[in-house]
Amino acid sequence: MEENPVKEVDNNEIIVISGFKQKKVPPLVWRECIKKIWEVDPLLCCHCDALMKIISFIYGRCDQEDT
Image (cartoon, rainbow, N blue to C red; front, side):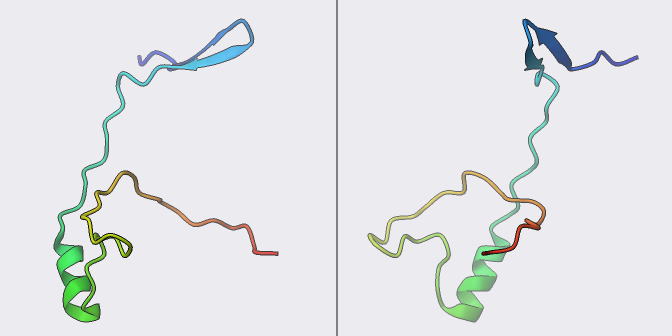
């Protein structure tokens, strides 16, 4: 049986992430496709032309409407 990863200490939650496995970063095939179709490199900074790196991904959709 798996231990509950959420523990409560002094009204604060402590979440144990020792078993967390990071998702794999997709290959840069998508970058090559964008460069071919749009003729723009999505990882080049538009201000200084430096190569950017991916630091996170957004999964899912925001259901909040713009006001």
